[in-house]
Image 1 (cartoon, rainbow, N blue to C red):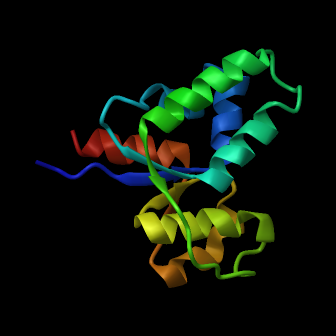
Image 2: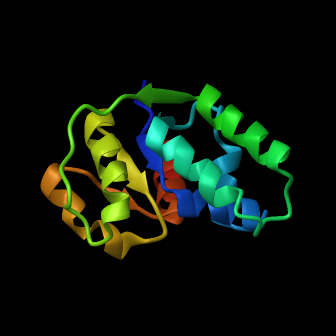
Length: 140
């Protein structure tokens, strides 16, 4: 039995999934709850999901966004982070994602690969949603 990949889903992937049902971000979001990967979250990440998705740029109601975030949370492993390595990344606002990935021993799935170049020194792999889908395809 193969282990499920453990992933941290960057907010930009979730936003892209809400923005279009045609892309790979939506495919990844559609797999939540299907035991293809183990999604990892923390309170700061969930707060960022909510803040970004509710900025009024999507054609969804706040309740619809809450419902999806609740579903994501219900199908995720939750982590409390007790240590901080800041600043580490190009964008200091992404450091909490790295801290979660280290704690959860997970890969970060993002469209902003360049922002996470320093993650490799912590043993964290970075991949796009497309890379994740290819990895999942190979493991089946």
